[in-house]
Length: 221
Image (tube, rainbow, N blue to C red; front, side, top):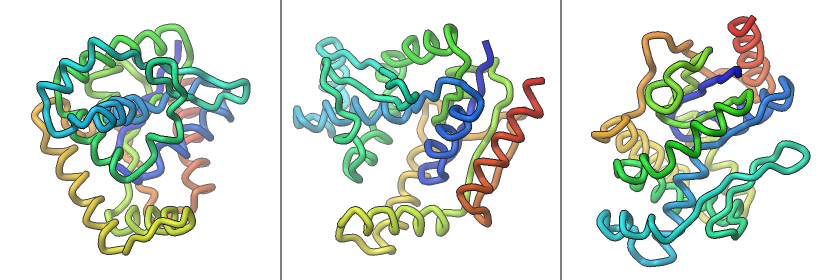
């Protein structure tokens, strides 16, 4: 099977770019961030998002599964409920960063991710795909953009959804998320020695997608 790992910070466009590349190449797209968001959603609903011990206890009572629509769109299920839309709020995004730092949560989701990759040609994105989840992936791509660029993109997206936020608030969230993801004790966000660095700061979405597709094609032949 062909396994492509795309890692990078929040807001770099990993999900959108990886999804488009997977569709073009006929691969399965796996958004691992959605899995951590689902854990965060469950913890938020139970009011335990600030208690690591209770989050760990919660894991034995939940099931998290991925499903794929006919067009390849990924859906994520929490105890059988499709929560694909509920996990896309700023609160759950920050919560995902928190729960992803808990080793037991990462263990809980690891087999699910690896099993999908073992059975399918996949493009999997996240924070530690190349370093932990799929260390034998090829190619390994580290997709990034400047914090200011990522914040501007996220701000525009939230405003279009009707959210009342300021650019400064979004930038602060981006910087906080970057710090949390890169400084956590378990599987911190970082490129590997084999990672191909891909900066999308000065690129349009279409240019970014083309760059990643070309990079994948050049490295799987």
